[in-house]
Image (cartoon, rainbow, N blue to C red):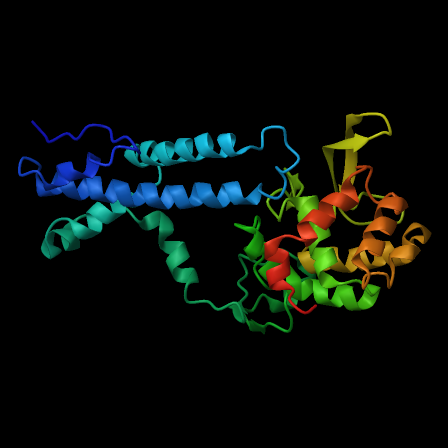
Length: 324
């Protein structure tokens, strides 16, 4: 009969001592250790996901030390349960790499065909990318089909791979900050104000409006479609405050080809509308900018400026914009 270890409780400090038992085979011990490693990895993923919402849960009625305590207990246990189910596949890869003899590993069929494209991508650098005919979708770039290498001129150009979703607030800031500098100079607004506003609109890049047919809208500021917009759009359900209560509405939003285009349109959007004239060149005074932003009606949320102010004062914004 094969060795079987009982399901480990996340709070049972004696659980892993069974691995030292002489009655447990090396194969079983290796599998258990690999699953424990995978559970640690899953726990880190859950922790990163929780941190995304930390800045937004302060006003929630469910925000309390007790809730956090039990939530952490749940995350500890569920990470172990998930690793037991081999959903991530990390434990299986570890067992495959560490178990058996070298000769066995050479002759065993590999199970990693599906991740080989990712290994190939490691040879590419973000500065110099080769455009292939298969990856070229824009007809305006047909002259590049020959496979010439494109040298990156500036952050956010069309040829730089852009993430569909950002893994953390820091990843969001690292990507968007260079793009925001130009908008900051053009509008006379502190860059951290623009980043904080976009962070609120998109949940640090986690909840950018998506289209079933066009994918990521790249709309960093949730700018709606208007008569002066002649580009692509996507319709989605949004929540608006009508002066009395919050209501769900269908609205059409702009879709961009890349994040740089979204930033450029944000500059044009504020500069060309009389409602936002008070925002231009007021960015050196953060409180004045937020006051004018709320007054301009950019968003219907009555606490819109307060929420941006809270993000602006967060540790991660303060650390990334020291002296700016």
